[in-house]
Image 1 (cartoon, protein in one colour):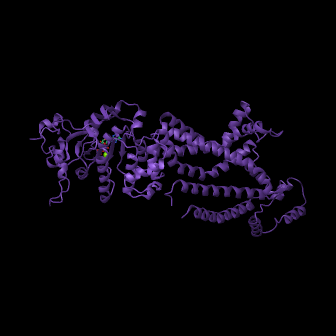
Image 2: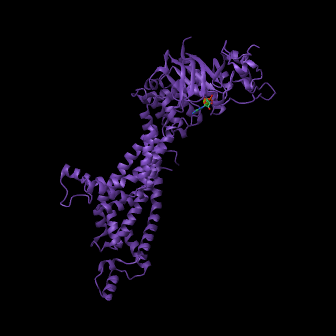
Image 3: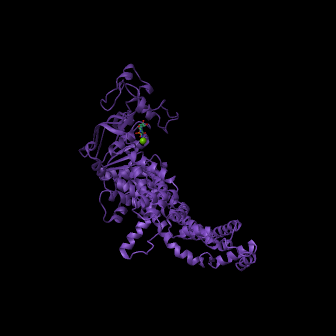
Length: 320
Length: 309
Ligand SMILES: Nc1ncnc2c1ncn2[C@@H]1O[C@H](COP(=O)(O)OP(=O)(O)O)[C@@H](O)[C@H]1O
Ligand SMILES: [Mg+2]
């Protein structure tokens, strides 16, 4: 089967999966106490008739199957609904926040992948105390939740040393232009990206090290050395290549970890992204926004898994 | 005859542990194929690893002796100088061609690696094709992955990579053991042809006397880390002198004979529990007291107190 037809088939399979996710999310949130109207009214002593009228206006008085049907109908026409809490369409709201989340998760992913692979290779190649240090550090880091690490980083580098900002993605007075603005942006990014990257980095370093140790013992590495290949070439041409499918699988299948971590990190650092929006929308009982974000996260995980499998196949032609 | 490869009183041991190769001497001349035979565990592969300077564990080392390649003692060279000789002056072929090829690289990339490791980077495509042609493989094999090749083709790819830089010496460690009988003959033929046509010196390691008979000029019989007998193939098969060699020959099935092949009792002693005296004495039908205490020296091609007795 060609890679293209495999990809198309997997994409087709993703549609019923995402539909099931949408239905499940909808029912779970419908079963939770409270709705947008209670949140909208808050503690204001509104007359019961007024509340009932509002529920009727928003269609919240309809039975669950009817509401679900209407939700799915809107989804099919790519309409994510309207956020009453923010008084704008959910799509506009999400689009405005997407950039910040991509910047944070993209940076964390890149840092975790590059450093994780480098540390894993180094540990496998050098062995001894370097290996023990990397393994110990990885185990420790993996056990550290993002929100806790985030708060430690804020305490140390923002409050204690005062080196870096701890809240938001840019100064409140607005970002500077050009190069200065870029550097400033990096200063804001550094702490949240580190907090988000660390667990992922630990995971990647561990799998890279384990695979590299295995490959370094392989017969084909001995054969490469027998041909005169240097240790650097052995690492780059054989070890890295043969470790890559496993490393990419771990990276891709744990994309959910990164997204969940992003929600926590954004909340701790006041980062204006999707994760922070999800947190706020839950507090505001903003159901359409909640549903849209949960669906996006599920779709991202499905796509990450698909990309992983396609890349795996590209790297290792033996996978049928 | 000038020796290309000259192994002199080589000793290989595990650090603070047993001796695996105990003072062996061998030499391979240009155009000559020397067979190194013996049962599994006798130290044949360790000898090959010592020549290459690549041991399976860092604790294994050459403890004494010399390995001269074209007159230069390899044991005195720096690690990088040795690396530069590997693949360029010494080629190596291993037992199982499927595990010795990187599953994620094409055949062509393996051969390219041999060139690139020694700074040969221009015109790689024609060089790879020539290397494949040398082992009777079509140019199209260059783009294939190992899993798309047969066992015999894989071994030819490994030989092509080993010969790519035109080494002086090729070490082949059980190159046909993992292959079908029908494929074996072709590979041995190829090695014989390279030795004859290009003056390649071949050290052919095997436990199969049939392979030796077919391919080698000279043969050294190794037992428990020592050479026990060395002779021309013709002489060894006609008149084996060491009881171990006699046992090995008797255990080869002779189709002209009705009797079942003779199986030598016992096995090679483990390296940590070597018997004193002649290491073969616990299995030897001709053993006398002297054999149990004093190791016999190599005299006139055989190391045995009872040779000629
Ligand atoms: N990695 C190792 N560490 C210690 N001893 C080893 C190792 N590999 C092999 N040996 C020992 O070295 C001896 C010779 O092995 P080897 O050269 O592989 O034998 P052969 O190739 O003749 O079958 C054997 O006794 C074996 O147990
Ligand atoms: Mg062996």
